[in-house]
Image (cartoon, rainbow, N blue to C red):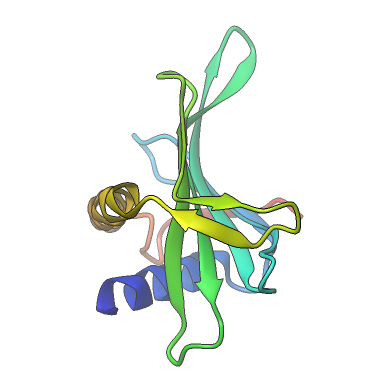
Length: 140
């Protein structure tokens, strides 16, 4: 619970009142954070991603999508997917029916993404992406 609450706090802090931003820290790949819509349960979906470039194409390295559960107080953010274009990986925690409702969960992947996100968020803090000195560019 506390981990998901921490994810929600960080994502909300990073995005602020914007719908898409790019954060830059010298020496590291820029970080993009974007509100990408709503889940079937009307919860916000937020993407957090490092982009690289290969042959002129943007490559996710990685991209994670989180669902922010707004019914909870404090809010919680659950990782839903992981994508890394360089490695050809696209993983989703849930399967969905035609209306977008969750039908099955991959519990092992859910735990793996939680662990990965915990490490990634710690690294982002250590690298300065959560500091006041980060260069913040509003994209929308």
